[in-house]
Image (cartoon, rainbow, N blue to C red; front, side, top):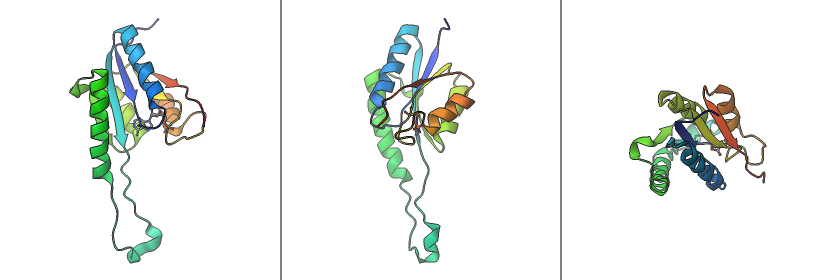
Length: 147
Ligand code: AMP
């Protein structure tokens, strides 16, 4: 059996994250592997081009989302005893950032939920599916009950 040395846990802070977190934690213990955690904040300014020039302002919640995510990640890292340099908070596309960090940090197992906020009741969400297809390392999609 392969021996994993560096496991990357991807959390989207959606309802069923707890199951994914527990599975990653168990595997890290079994393999005595380093455990890192990543959350990616989608960079989506709310701009409806349909309103054109009549829209008086653009709303960008990115900074607020980053602050909330930072606090949540710090709390989770403390709970899992994960060092600060193994906590990744990235901005952009979740699938691309998770794959990038996994490659750069020589991760050999990525642990994701089968679906999360982007795939509410799907069997396999779009982020999970994309990571499964494009990651160069093993990927564990923890099956979550569909809603
Ligand atoms: P999805 O495929 O988007 O429904 O999400 C499936 C899984 O991908 C989630 O359970 C997380 O493990 C991971 N994931 C999705 N979005 C993010 C994100 N923004 N940051 C980190 N992990 C994510």
